[in-house]
Length: 139
Image 1 (cartoon, rainbow, N blue to C red):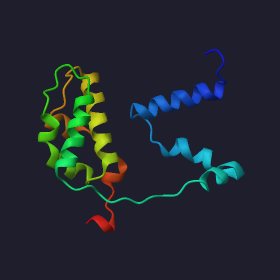
Image 2: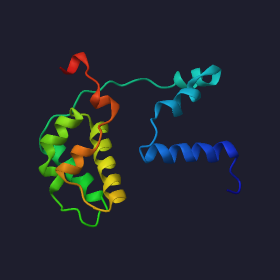
Image 3: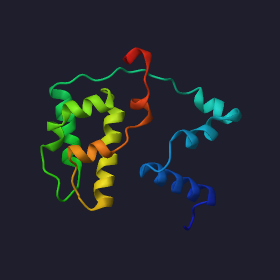
Image 4: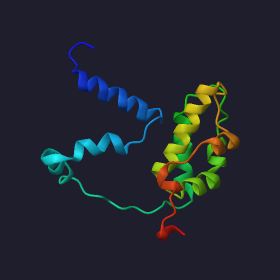
């Protein structure tokens, strides 16, 4: 690639693998937050703890909007809002986990040629690490 340093090409490849779900995000971030520069960068950010979202019209609207953004040729509109309870249970109400599930199911649907997300397809997708962890505050 012209005008792009080798390190940046490697970083772009790592990000592509992350986007495809083939690599965890933590190893990509750890080296960048070490040393003097990393400490300075880490000092500029804070952690904002959020709780799970509830069920209701706003969450259903979010799921419908996510579904509307999918470009799967055989997907039946209205499928994902109809699976709201299942999605909420799998994601523990966490929006990041919800996005992970839908994105992973969509990628699988493209790769296996079905071009649609069904309950069975969602069940075959592994949830992200955050929603798999059993935390004392969510028992």
